[in-house]
Image (cartoon, rainbow, N blue to C red; front, side, top):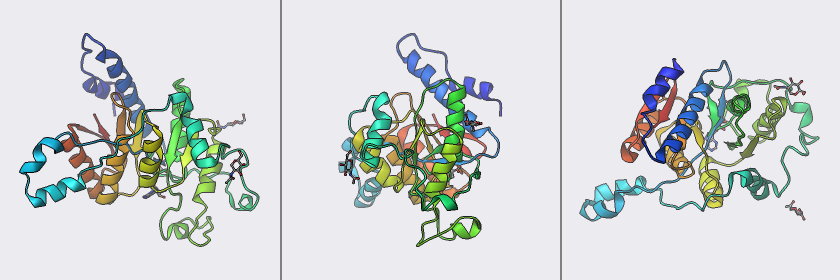
Length: 289
Ligand SMILES: C[S@@+](CC[C@H](N)C(=O)[O-])C[C@H]1O[C@@H](n2cnc3c(N)ncnc32)[C@H](O)[C@@H]1O
Ligand SMILES: *[C@@H]1O[C@H](CO)[C@@H](O)[C@H](O)[C@H]1NC(C)=O
Ligand SMILES: *[C@@H]1O[C@H](CO)[C@@H](O)[C@H](O)[C@H]1NC(C)=O
C-alpha cells in the first residue's frame, strides 16, 4: 500500500477556517491507523467502543410502521457519555476505577502465576489496535509506533482475556483452569517485555461492559479506536456502535480488523450508511472516514 497517496485522497485541501486543525489531526490519526497495519507478524486486539445517537430518530419515528420501529430499536445506542476527563487524567481514572488506585503492573506477576508465563510470546493476528486485545500484539506494536512518532499516548485495551472455548487446545503451551486460560497474565507479561507498561492499560471485561459501564460513564474518549473482538454480525455491530460513543468528535478515527468476515462487513457498512461515513479498505482492515 502506498500510504502517502492514500492519505492524500483522504485529506481534502484545508478549508480557510478552524476546521483545518481537526483535519490535520484526523490525517495524522488515519496515518497512524494505517501504519498499524503494515508491520510484520504482530497482532493485537484492542477494543474501544464509543457512543452515538442516531440523528434521524426524533423526526422520522412517528411515521414508521411497527416493524420498522422495532428495527430502529436495534439501531439505537442512546446513552449519553459523560463529559470528557482531561487526557492527562485518563490513565489514572482507569487505574482508580478498575485497580483501586494502584497500577496493575506494580505487583506483577503474582507468585502463583509466574511459573506458567512464557517469557517470549508474541503471537497475534496481524492487527494492531485494541478492541479485543488478546495477547497484546496490537497494543505493544501501537506503543512502539507512537513512541517512535514522538506521540504521547495511552493505549486502552479491552478484552475479557478468556479467549474462546478450545483456545488452550490450540496453544498447547497455555494452561487452562476452570476455563481460565491465563490470557490476561500472558498479555501483561508481553507488555512488560515490550517496556510498554507506562503507555498501556486495560479493562478486563466484556466489550459492552467496558465501553458502556466503563469508558462512556467515566468520560474516557479515544482519538483512535480499533475494533477486533468477536466477528459475528451482532457482536461487531454492538462493538462498533458502543465504541463510536467514546470516539473523540470531531477528529477521532475508528477502524478494525477482519473485514473478510461477512458479519464484520455487514456491521461496518450498516454503521457507515446510517452515520454518513465512507469505508476505506486496507487489506483485512476497514477504516471509517
Ligand atoms: C481475534 S482476537 C484479537 C487479536 C488481537 N487484535 C491481536 O492482534 O492479537 C479476539 C479477542 O477478542 C476477545 N473477545 C471476543 N469477544 C469479546 C467480548 N465480547 N468482550 C471482550 N473481549 C472479547 C477475545 O478474548 C480475544 O482475545
Ligand atoms: C483499596 O485501597 C484502599 C487504600 O488505598 C484500601 O483501604 C482498600 O482495602 C482497597 N480495597 C480493596 C478491595 O482492595
Ligand atoms: C526494554 O528495555 C530493556 C532494558 O532497557 C532493553 O534491553 C530491551 O531491548 C527493551 N525491549 C524493547 C522491546 O524495547
